[in-house]
Structure formats: C-alpha cells, structure tokens
Length: 514
Image (cartoon, rainbow, N blue to C red; front, side, top):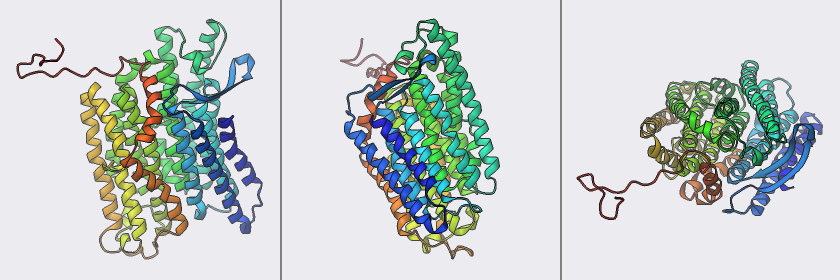
C-alpha cells in the first residue's frame, strides 16, 4: 500500500490547494500548504526506502488488484532499484521547485492555487508511472502527465506559451498514439496465447515472432524517444523550456522527460530484448548525434533558457547511449545519470530563472559582472554549471564516466565521438558563466540582487546532493545495480569478457587464455 499512498498524497494535496481561497491575502497560506504536502510526500518516500530491501533485486512493495477485467488490465504497482531511484528523484525535487516558485510572477490574474496544484498533481502521476507494472496502467498515467505540463506551460509561461504548450502536446500525443497501437498489439498477442494480460511479469515471457516483436517495440520506443527527447524528435523541448517558468522546466526536464529513458529500460529492454538488440545500432547512432548536436547548439545560444534545454538534449544522448550498449557498467551509469542530471539541471534552471526574473531578460549579452553584486548567486551558478559539464568531484562525473567506460567496450567509435561532447560542454558552460558573471558590471544589471534566504533553502538540497554524490555515489549504486543486472541479463550477450593480456608478439601471456 505504501506506493499507492505515496502517489495519492500529492494528488490529495493538489485538490486541497485548489479548494483554498484564491484571494491575494491567502496566497502565503496556499504556498505553505503546497510546500507542506510536497515535504510530506518526501517523508513518505523515505519511509518507502526504509521498507525497500537494498540488494535483494526483483520488484518489491508490490500490490495488484483487478482494474478492468474485460481488458485484462490490473492496478499493479511495484518498484525495482531503477524505479525507486526515480521516485526519490521526483519527491526530492518537488519541494525544491514548489519552494523556489514562491515569488514566481504569474501572467495576468492567473491563480497561484492552480499553478501549485498542477505541480503536485504532476508529482503524483509521475510516481505512479515509475511504479506501474501493468502496461495499460502505465500508458494511462504516461498520457496523464501531459495534462499538468500543458497547463503549466500554456497558462503560466511566457509570451510564446500557447505555441510552446501546443507543440509539446502534439509531439507527445503522437508518440502516445504509437504506443497505444503497440498496447493494442500486446493485448491481441496475449489473447491469442491464452488470457489477455498487460502485466510486466507476463509480458517478459511473451512468445512472439521477430517481425511482431519489432513492430511492437517501435510503438513503445517512438513514445519514449519523443519524451526523452532524442534527436531528431527533440524540437519541442527548447521552445517549451524557453516559455515555461523555471519550476515548470525543472519538473518537465528532470522528472517527466526521465519517463522516456525509464520506459526504455522497463518496457523495451525487458519485454522486447531481441528487438532492442536489433535497433541498438540506430539508437546509439542517434544518441551520439544528440550528444554533439545538443552541445553545438548550446554553444551558439544567446537565450539562457534555450542553452540549458540544449544541454539536456546532449545529456539525454549520453543516457540513451548508456542504455543501448547493454553493459552493466553503462546501464548503471545511465540510471545514475538520470538522478544526477535531475539534480544538476534543477539547480541550473532555477538559478538562471532567478537571474532572468531580476534582470528582465534571458539574453546572455544583457548580463555581465553580476558576481560583484550577487556572489552567492554566482557561486550557485558556478557549481550547477560545473556539474553540468561533469567536473570530477561532482555527481554527474561518475555517471558520465560509467556510460563512456561501458560504451568503449562495445562501440569505441561511439565512445570517441561522445567524448567530444564533454569538450563542447566545457565551452558552453564556461562561456556562459564568463559572459554573465565576470568582468565589469554592465549597465542594467544594478537590480540583480543576491539570493533570498528561501531561495538558498530551495537550492541547497540540490547542491548538497550534487557535491555529496560526486564524492560518494555508492549508496545510490547499491540500489541500482541489482535491477540493472537483471535488465542487462535479458538483452544482448551480457557484459563483454575481459581480454587476456598478450605479449609483444601478440600471443597470450602466461596465465592467459590459450
């Protein structure tokens, strides 16, 4: 029951926040209530972790109830190490973004009640997605997450919010329709083999022909590469990030987009291992293009929000590449990258959003010398930026290193090309920091004051996790590794065997394989 309670708590919070009085004088009460429910959800997620047996593997905390008997659909929940990590990411980030949104300027007379309620609703739906072990339930929740994001962008975003919200919705609905076609296909296949079922435990043992498996895989994968987003299906993201509020951008990129990469691990690799292996060369190729394309476009951006969005296109390329080279090291690195990227991008979106709100411009060229009047803001931006370029000692470094280490064992060419993305990352982050923070104070920046105490409180947990996991990521890896080993064992040839050392003549050295 813990997973149901965990998902329901923010949904109840959303309802309570919506029902509170909407007068301006009651706004602090509304905000405090939203923060309270998000913190309560975080506390429940820590209780969930206390009940989760680290190292045991398999799906834990399971519950299953008949939902739609005629369709063979169940209300079925359970988490492995990958799902529980992403639920923790969601519950840690939501209090951060709700608190950071305390001073957000909403367009027109938009209600702060609706704004915060949609955030809490999105948290509850995302938890459900990461816990669902029935494909039909997963699909329903997968599509439902589009609703809060659509309204958060379309109702509370910038001048181009309507265009960005509709573009986001169209792209993701197309992907969802393709996945629905595969869901129907799964129903037909399971019905032919006995009793129709969408349960993950039944689908992992599905006997299906090669062509059918590949067609079903394509439907699921199409939805996930749009959500992730992978080049060339990424174009909705920069527009959405440029129009959304910083808190909305964090939830969209750090939580909702992770549903795409999570879906690849849970539904594509576990149900369609043969098709996943068949598609891996193309997916790895697109991932490498995403890494380089996103980084190159980030270098050329003047809009800070679009720069951060393109960095995420590049980072998602690393995650997807790590998944589809099918090694334990790269897959564990990709899963850890999902968590670390969530924290890093959250800090980057929030601190740059504060900068933009105070300067009244998102153009990098309008800033300059801000560190002289806002040293704390400058320091947070530096840490967030360095984590985005995977500086050793900060959390994303170890996950990116693991992805590349695993990739080099399978595809050295992809590994070499992806490494160029690290060089480009240093360029776009350091150039942005230099132009906005260093040098003489440019005219128009006098009103960019330093972080308020509540903003420091909102950003501090992300910074602490970025630094802490940079030095000691083992607790998270202990949770992730058993689930990763189970996924990798189902697809490909398993981890490549180490090569025996050879002497100068090229013959096996003593003790090596004959």
